[in-house]
Image (cartoon, rainbow over all chains, first blue to last red):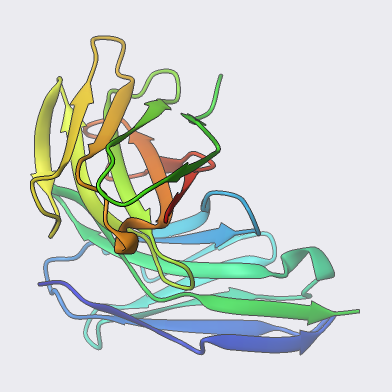
Length: 112
Length: 113
């Protein structure tokens, strides 16, 4: 079945630095790749997503890139702020299969 | 527009008991998916409901069952609770044909003693 690997498991940066989280997927049929931010005691919040017909997508300080050949995608956060501190999850799914397969999460800590 | 809501927030049960968790989907959404999130892990897909029928299931035993109602709200039922069922149970709503965008509720924290 589909498997999604995510690295690193923890990431500590200084405020203003950039942060990059990487994921790889196994199912070549996957064509939808969302990223979720989960704060303590809350459910995952969709922050950005990308589909397989696009190589890059940007929304203010957040960007996602996709390399279908290598089966990997990455989340880039620029000018990090303390409120960016949370656990970030990548996920993948294929058209016709509504389930999301999640990575194991990255705990991002942004220090002032 | 109202978001996804879940009840209760927390629940404590003992091994062997049964539990029912509830979810109200985001307005305009017709599909509900349930996920189990163990501590320190990513969410794991349990099943999805569309048009009041199960529309896909993950690797969970039959003691995990669900319902969807005409107003698109949903229930997750777990029978014969085991200690390993302790987790955060998340509900996500979506619109069929929306290319898989799923929006999550705050979850129900279930503790099995």
